[in-house]
Length: 126
Image (tube, rainbow, N blue to C red; front, top):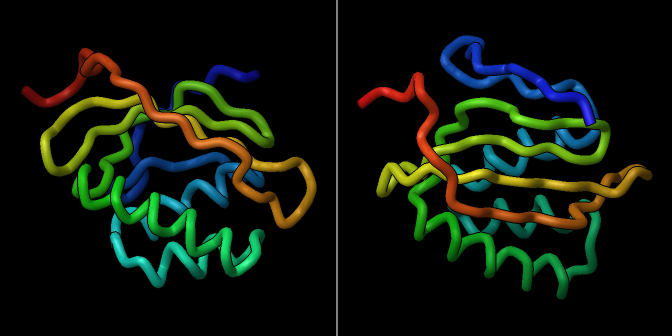
């Protein structure tokens, strides 16, 4: 995995890799920050059955409401199918490491989402 030092923001937002996982993650974060169930269902229907998309959407809505959305800070690791991003929750300001993995083959189904606590980066606003 290539270690990327992508701390610089582009137009106020983190520039994500132009890769299958980067594109899917960008779309997921857009839907996540909107927090609407219909958006999650549509996102997951691209790669899953209606029932599975509905189940995934219910889980994601709960996480979106709990966090208030995400502010992306930096990409810590990335390749074609895996990305790890340091992010901050909008509701509490808690720092998290957000891991997102997709299938190698199109349409790049989400195969894993992981979240764990993280330390604030040195350049974080106090």
